Amino acid sequence: MTHSIHPIDVILHKRDGLALTDAEIRAFIHAIVRRTPTRQLVTDAQIAAFLMAVFLRGLDPRELATLTEAMRFSGEVAYTEALNTFAIDKHSTGGVGDKTSLLIAPILASAGLAHPTSEGVPGIVVPMISGRSLGHTGGTLDKLETIPGFNTQLSFPEMRDVLKQYAAALIGQTPTIVPADRILYALRDHTGTVESPFLITASIMSKKLAEGLNALVLDVKVGSGAFMRTYEKSKLLAELMVETGEASGTRTAALLTTMDEPLGRFSGNWVEVWECVDIMKQHRHPMSADLIELSNILSGWMLHLAGRADTPEAGATLSDEILRSGAAYKAWLAIVEAQSGDITVFEDPTTQHKPQATRTITAHQTGYLAAMDCKQVGWAVQRLGAGRAKPGDPVSAHAGIEMHAKLGDKLEANQPIVTLFAEDPELLGEPEAMLRETLQISAAPPQFQPLIREIITKENLA
Image (tube, rainbow, N blue to C red; front, side):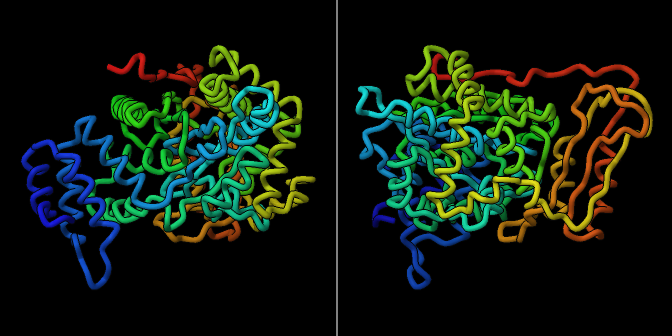
């Protein structure tokens, strides 16, 4: 904190509803990441007060853009522009069975490798920084780390080396990537400020923009399994992220997508890898249809923004062609091997699925699968051992669920609806009760929300 800007003044200004200057925001973030145990430029109490002031007062577009920028440059950045390619990524706000990254990265990598810079078309690279499971939502890193040897902790120079050869890399946030976010996030969890759309935007966008992106596609969940509690709050978050991305010079689009049931066939860790590998190997299970559709739609937007398709719809068609051709699977194997993963486990993914206990819930009557609280389904998956209640908790590679029916499916009495997997039989009881409570069967088919509810771009921002 510079001698002319004191943390208490920044807190008081925001508490009183004043707009913070760029200098105030940058100085506050600088003080957060430069403090040491013997030199507290700003205290935890002051950071907590700042977070609560932002939670209560919000941020205007300039303040939010400056906060995101200050966090983005609080540590090392990727400088992917040195690769002379078009860098693009996808981010999801989190859901149940949400494994689209495992398909999208190899799809886009395949498209990038098919049109190298030597042909006059900018190559595509996908520098994907992913997160871990928390609460009812799954985490891409936990899924990837069920692959023996897979290294998610690449440095940015190591990531660029993988990108140069294979066009995609899937890594986690290291201590040197956006360190300001680590500090703020830890205190948000303790101060009741986690749900602030402004703080969520700064957290997500600072990490994504640190990748040096030309474009970003956002998958913002709505529905019973979404992190944001209402459609309006999800839409506000989408608008804030698009506005912030565009302010940074990164082309940004957000799709509001329905999360009223688990996406695809499996929810867990290894089982989700298995599902995606099956799809890339042309084993398209009917329960994976929505996963394939959403992955193609998101990839289609990415291919469109990267100049590979005239429209997002044409991009989605190209994405499915890449999936069906086997090119995505070839790219997947190359990426995994480049990050030290053992690709032999994909020869028969079923051999890696080793739960010690299973249980199947069946329909108690004939009718239609009418509704479920998808968040409760996610918590059931977490209780089975596949997720964590707080950062640092261990997760099981083998725990999870397999859905045998989708919303609207006609069920006969005693027909399987969901199978539970756990490493300990004693872990089955509570999740079973949670699932039995939330899975509803009715005599009439339910009304559905479309998979894509709304699309937010700079052209239609309010």
